[in-house]
Amino acid sequence: MGYKDQIDLSKLPKHIAVIMDGNGRWAKDKGKMRIFGHHSGVLSVRDVVEGAVDLDLKYLTLYTFSLENWNRPKLEVMAIMELMVSTIHKEIANFMKKNVKLNAIGDLDLLPKKCYDELMNAIDQTSGNTGLVLTLALSYSSRREILHAVKNIARKVQEGKLNVEDINEEVFEDNLFTKGMPNPELLIRTSGEFRISNYLLWQIAYAELYFTSKLWPDFRKEDLFEAILDYQKRERRFGMTSEQVN
Ligand code: IPE
Ligand code: IPE
Ligand code: MG
Image (cartoon, rainbow, N blue to C red; front, side):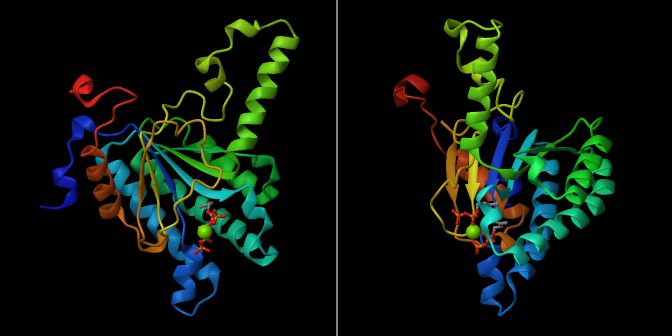
């Protein structure tokens, strides 16, 4: 029996977040340029999105490019941006076929115009789709997102539209880029690194963390299913005792 058949569909996480890491090392292991790893990583993205659609998952959020990634060598950054433009363009038909709604979070205004336009076009074209919401975290920094929320809220207080006493978790979440999305129940990171790298810091407060040594270009939907199975075996206690939650 494959992993997929063992998944309890009634206990599926609503939202899975992924840190797609290890493209560079994957390429290096093969004696190739880092960008070759990024190209291969796109195949993993396609397969994992397909797996998410197969399961009827509601939200999948992929860490595609961090704000810190702008500090990489210019050539790599440019190649990644080019790859993004061509990939997003090519995938639109697939998104339409699979009823996938594309979304993006991050400091998108830092993207090259061509990339930004292609992204906005794809988001616009898929906006009526009602299946999986596929969010790309692009030029994304969780600390920036939190600061952005703080500034928004401060502005509302300053303008007299909000009382300080009324600031609560809901109000705060309404000012994050992920507004309207449930918090991820499961966070997957590939490539054997055990860190969060400035990803969804607020949102993953109670997420189950799943780390695999597989490099992202080797990750396939079967691996996603395996991670979900692992998640389903865990007991989520939210501060309570095991007796209380059972
Ligand atoms: C993840 O793979 C992709 C991006 C961060 C854009 P890396 O490029 O970080 O690959 P490693 O970690 O160097 O192997
Ligand atoms: C995190 O990966 C960002 C993405 C996966 C897009 P990095 O490879 O940039 O993370 P660090 O810098 O090694 O923590
Ligand atoms: Mg990396």
